[in-house]
Amino acid sequence: MNELIKKQLDDAKAHMEKAIEFCDNELIKIRAGKAMPTMLDGIFVDYYGTPTALNQIGTVNTPDARTLVVQPWEKTMLISIERAIMEANIGLNPQNDGIVIRLNVPPLTEERRKDLVKKVKEEAEKGRIAVRNIRKDANEKIKRSKSEGISDDEIKTGEAEVQKLTDSCIVRIDRLMEAKEKDVMTV
Image (tube, rainbow, N blue to C red; front, side, top):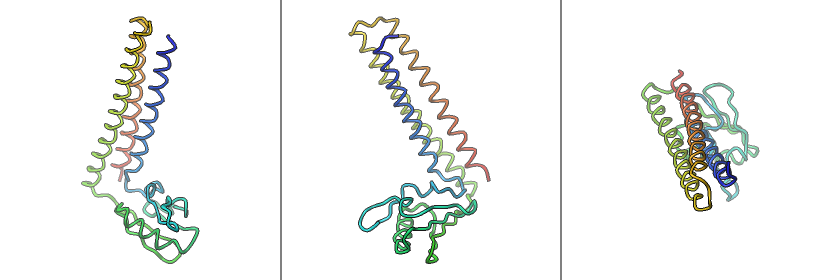
């Protein structure tokens, strides 16, 4: 296979891996009724005037399946952490006992589970669209390489390889989606 086409394939593969990783991270953020420390990722606390990730100013633990405990390294940060969690509007009510902040994760209703499954499917579809767009860009770059003396057969082979790569990435996204759906629907 031509080096130029090989480079296009490698670039497409790297971009598709990033798209899958992003999709996976988005799916992780969807809560499934179980307490997970990652539920608080993306919450930033005002740490002496600097927005700082919550997990960088304290520890986040799950003592049981329905409770998150945030223990700051500095007791003075309790009120700031509590405020940041409430402002994040993630549907959890912080309880400050002066030492740690407890967050009780309520069990999901059947209706809420179905809404979350819809959101899971939307995120998976965004991932598939991203992979398809990467395929389209890679195929266009491969077709443009014809002007550099690459034969039609090599271009067709390159496009077939991009399609194989696309298919395998979409299967991986579908597996991630199915696993998350199962997780959300498990009571």
